Image (cartoon, rainbow, N blue to C red; front, top):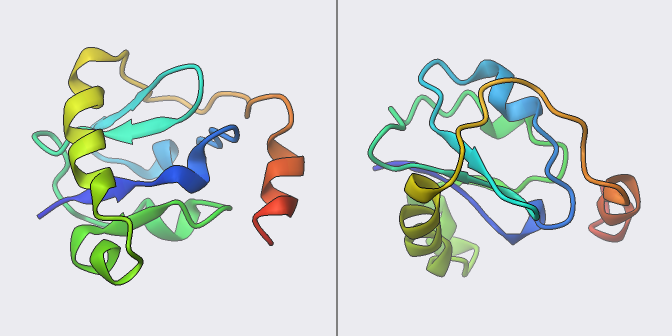
Length: 102
């Protein structure tokens, strides 16, 4: 089992979650973060840190109807740079957060 980043992260890329990750399993691109399932230890420390509720345990992701993000994270993360330090959110992230209702 692993923890998954979903589409709520798109256009935000808040990295509060990265600061509590003990194994550096987060990766990033120009839009969002992803979790490498081969590195994640499923500690779930990142879940409460996400200000846009974009991170789920894979058992909970099915209930949210976002199970396609399991494969997306697995496919994209290994080919992207590791994010192991907090970065500035993307421009417009606060507006996106408001749109998402947070």
